[in-house]
Image: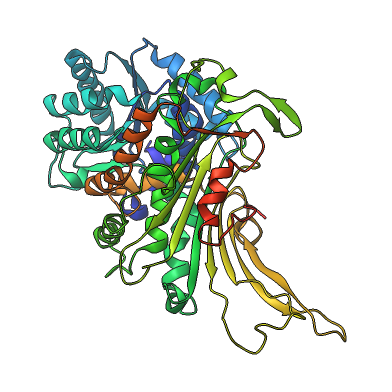
Length: 514
C-alpha cells in the first residue's frame, strides 16, 4: 500500500510549489522555539497539504532523548501550540518519519550519526532527500554547527540540483559588525549564499508581506510616498511584558539588539526602499540593502539621534510589577537598555529631510507593532486656517500585531447645520476580511526555505549594512555604562527623552495601537 493510500491527506503534497522530498533537521529540537513555533509550523504545513509526501523530521540536541520520547513530547507541543486542531491520523504519519540524534554541536561524531540517520530516512523513502537544517540554538554554537555541516559533507550534498542542502539560521546574526562579518565568513566557507536562509520571523507576517502590495499595487499611494508629501514616519514595536524568565539572556542583548537592529530595520527597509525591478528575491533584497546603506550615521551623545532607558516599577495590566533591576538574573548595576528610540534620516532623493522615528521596548503601555506614515498638511487650501474646521493630517497606519490590518485617517464633515469636521478612520482587519486562522509567520518561512524562495530572508550584506549603523551606537553605550541611561515607569510609553527626540522637529509619538 502506498503512502497516499494509507494517508489520503497526502495526495498531491509533493506537487505544491515544487516542494522536493525533504528531511528537516532541527538543531535545538528540545528548545522553546522548536516547541512553540517550529514543530507546530511543520504540522500545520502537513495539515494544509503543503509539504512533500516524502517528508522526514530529525531532531538534534545535546540531551540524549530516545526517539519515542521525542515523538511524545513533539505531539504534546503541537497539541498545545498549533493553530490547527491536533489530529492523531495526521500526527501518525509525521511520527512515523520523526527521529532524534543526540550529540554535541561541536562533536564530529554526532554529525556522522546524523548522516547515518539521514541515510536511513532515504532508504525508507527509496530516493534521495533534500536536507534543510534549521539552526535553532544559542548563537554561541552557530559557527560550530555551520563548520561541522561543512566538514561532514552534509552542506555540499547535491549542490547545483533541486535537492541541494539549505540552512536556516535564527537571529541574532551577530552581536555587532565584526561578529556578523565573521559569521558570514563561516557560512560562506561551508555553504553557497543561495543555500543560506537568515530568518527574521517578522518578514513572514502577513501585514509585513503586504507592504509591497500596499505601496506598489495601489497607484494612489506611490506618488505620495516621498519627501514632498510625507511629513514623518513612526515605527513602533512595543511589548507589554517584562523580561520574565529570559533575564539572563536579555541582559546580554537589550532592546536594540533584540528588536531594533533586526525586526524594526526590516520594517524600515520595506517601507522606504525604492521599487524593485521585479518581484524576484534578489531584486527585492538589492533595494533593501541600498536603503539601509543610505541611512545617515547616527549622531551619538546628548542631543543625538538615540535615547535608551530601563523600566522601573509601575503598573502593567492593572497590577504592580517590578523594575528591570529587580527582575530575576539581572545584575544590580546593569546598564542594559529595555527601551530604545531612534531618529533616522535617509540620504536619498526620495526621503531627504523626512525623519523616520523608531521605538521598541519592554513593559510599555500595550503590545503593538505598527508603521504609521503621516502625510503633510497643506499650508494653504480651501479649509486651511479656518478655525471652524478641526483638520488632522492624513495618516496611513499598518498594524502588524496584534490586530493585523490597515487604517487610513481622513477628514470628514460632521452631519448637521454647523460647518464642522472631524477625523474618521477607514479600516480593515485581516481577521474580519480573510478569517482569523491565517498561517503563522514560521509556516510561510519554513515552506519558502524548503522550496528555495529567498525573498523573505536576509542576505549577508544586508545584515552587515544594519550592523554598520548600530555598532558605533552600541559601543558608545558600552563605554558610557549607566551614564545617560534614562528610566520609565512600567506601563508607560517610555522615557521623557523619547518625547524630546520628536519634539525638536515639532512631532509627537502617536498613541500606537489606537
